[in-house]
Length: 194
Image (cartoon, rainbow, N blue to C red; front, side, top):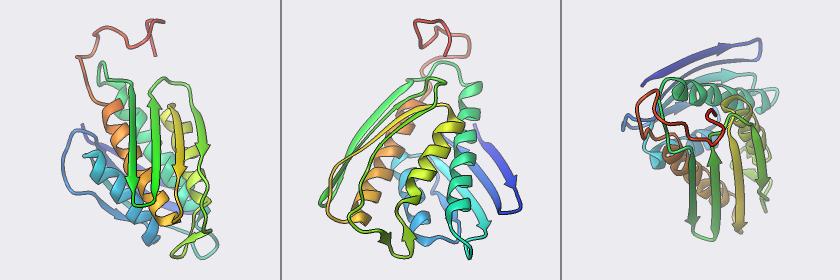
């Protein structure tokens, strides 16, 4: 199911398309090349379609754009779950990238919570400030209403750390949101509702 979300504020203008079941090459353009690279890696390795066209006041700071893209992606994940029926709910992945090893665990539970055990040895990857990734994931979690644990076990190169983290996120996401039954089938929670 294709989800399309547009968000325009005084600071950012974002158009996003997401289809977790469509295996088509991602298309990302945010004006932040390293961020584009990470989002592309997430969707490519998660085997889902993601298209993002985004502009923002990056001449001031990339924070607004990175955070707002997290919000919109989170909204689209939440929307994709609404009418899907039963899904796996849980997803996890441990992915290496040369010296780095990242672990991502997701629970699609309608309770937003982020655990972020990520340290970057270098502040920047190209012209991108790595601390902004926490803002992205926090925004995604708050809108998707998921529990997300991000753990970088080790790594010496910030680029490799980021890449292993985003690849693992995509793989865990794809599995957690994968449909397992029709709408109205048994709940994925002992409470009877997520």
